[in-house]
Every structure is written in C-alpha cells, then in structure tokens.
Image 1 (cartoon, rainbow, N blue to C red):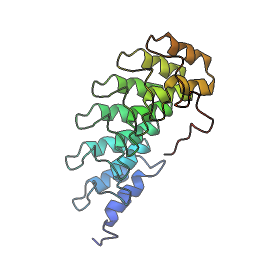
Image 2: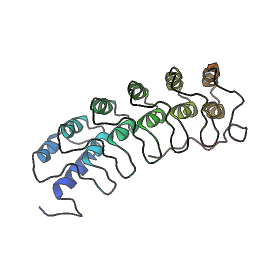
Image 3: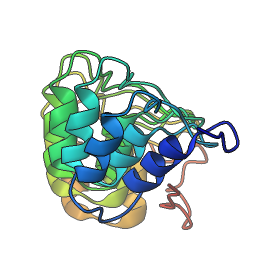
Image 4: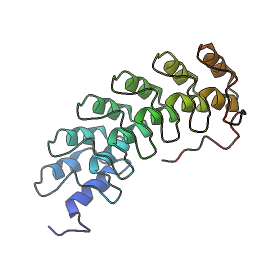
Length: 229
C-alpha cells in the first residue's frame, strides 16, 4: 500500500472518518479495524490519533471499538499535550468521558500545555455533570493550578457558575483564598463579574480575606474570560 506523507491511505481514511461531525455509524471503522496493514494508533501532524478525533467528536461507538484493541495507547497526548479524555471533556461528551474514566490506563488529571486539566476545562465549559464525575475520582486534584496559577474554583468564580462553585466549596481540599500568579483570588474574579451570590458563598468560608483583590489591590480589570480551544 502506497504511503502518503508517512501515513498510508487506510490510516488517513480512519483519521478523517473519526474527525467527521456525523459519521455513518461504525461500519467504516469496523472495516478498517479488520485490516492488518493499518496502524490505527498513528498520529496526524498535530499529534492526534483516530481515537483522539473520535473522542472529541463524541463518537462513543468508535471510541469503544478502538479502546478494545491492545495496539492502541488511550492516554497518548497530542502536540498540545492534550489527551483524548481532555478533548471529550472540552466538548462535553459525557458518555465518552464516562467510558474513559472506567479504564485504568486513563489519567484523568493530566494537564495540557497550558497546565489545564480536564477538570479545569469542564469548569470553564460549564459541564456540571462531568465536573461531578471527575471529582469522584481520588486521582483528580480539585485545586490544581494551571500555568498562570488559576484553579478550577478561580475559573468557576469568574464564569459565575453558582452550581459548580458550590460543588467545589463543599470540598476540604479546595482553597477558596488561593491567589493566581497575578495575585487574584476567586473572590477578586467574581467581584469583577458582580455575582453577589457567589461573593456571599466565598465569604462564608473562614479562610477568605475580603480585603484581598488583585495584586494591585483592585478587582481585575475587564478583558478577561477569553478562551481558545
């Protein structure tokens, strides 16, 4: 079989198939899975495998078929250090996330190149059910900061998600007064957004200092809350 830029036609077809928004069930994947000359764990130029694409598009049937193979590593990160569970979390594919969490070879707390974990992304995408699923795991750190020092609670406060803030504040291993690299606490972020209910929730905690705002002593200036995938 002829090679195309290091990837044979069968491998390229599988990557394209798994990257489709609405593929026709799993028959095409089944045909390729039956072939011995197709490496189904090969990555594209971005380091993403067919399994990674299937997870990000929520193709649970294809994900299940690929996970059943012994020649596929389900926890291989791409060039942005993103694993398939992180991609599934970003796009809110609860069924796929649940399937992945049931496997021992999946690290549900692996951070991407920006230091953000699946939990961090679930919070900013406001996927409450997935947040709860991840927090049930002992190997998920609910207070893990990204490369800018921002924790899941910091993001939840900024985004004004009352339910997720409440879920995080119920935990003893979450520090509600933790500041990021610019000295901004969750209270600082929520004060900027003006959500009084979350402000009250944070102030109930004994270890919150209401005098703490940004590193300049003021609430953060507008222009935050931007997110790129």
